Image (cartoon, rainbow, N blue to C red; front, side, top):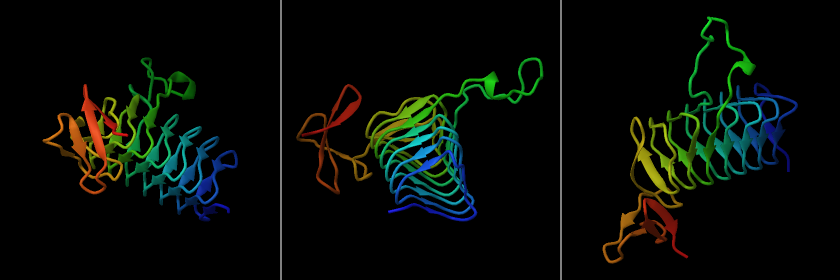
Length: 199
């Protein structure tokens, strides 16, 4: 197996692109970035230096993933979504001098396994999006998102729970704290503001 990189994509020779990964037109993969197997990097997407991306990750068109972001296996980053890396962004320092790479410390957005970031959502680093969570289109994430949480708004707030299928869970009236996926029938349990899968 090999990867597929379109001629107009820019992939630095120091980047690692896994088997079965496709990098589409005008995408840019910077130095020391590592992409796993079976990924799709859409048109015009950007992956910063040293970013770590797991297997089977999809970056849709014009997604911007700034270093030092880490994306778990099966993560989804929607069209034009942005993962930032500077909590206090400025072009210049207090004396008016142009800031360079050594003048600030990049902070990460970490996206858990199977989590999805909707179109034009923004994750303001440092922040963690939990496993299988779903960030609605246009949401602005400013604090950590629990596993399986459905968040929306500006700033993003939890408005429900989702399962591995991405479908909003339904509360089980017969089981206190119990939730069920209407698509798969999988059961979940809520305790102290966290959701866990039932064995």
